[in-house]
Image (cartoon, rainbow, N blue to C red):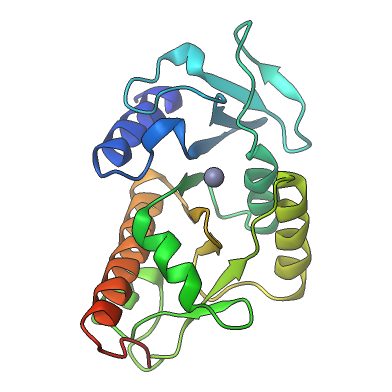
Length: 206
Ligand SMILES: [Zn+2]
């Protein structure tokens, strides 16, 4: 089986190629028995090496790190998600143009996803076309974003495995690498659809 770090590096290269992790943006993580591996801060996402990952426990303590490598500044967000969603084993957080356009379409902390067939892939049955994605305010202090998510998820779990940070980026999770990637792709497809629908004067929302 591929090392988790190698799988994360491969995913980062893929997402970098799609323009979702430019300028060292974004962070990816995967659960290991005692915590999770997460991308180190400030590393180019198209050529991550084994030393560009840091292992943390769910309280944020460093379990393994090469000298000079710090965990992603946004690791507190990953910790909140792993704590609230025990089924989540992989988390992908990326910064796409379309996600940032769509944050502007949110109302009261929610973005209504377009009622597309593809929502099935996010675990939404056909009969439920009204699906909201939670949208959080961005803060310079990442701890504040994580605290907001912690409060919101304790109150109500989102209907879909993801959350958007306004003018910042998307976070999606899944039970394994394939599931997390499929979820992220479906969210990003929805964002592209919504962006283009607005551009062409279509409603796009239900
Ligand atoms: Zn980010």
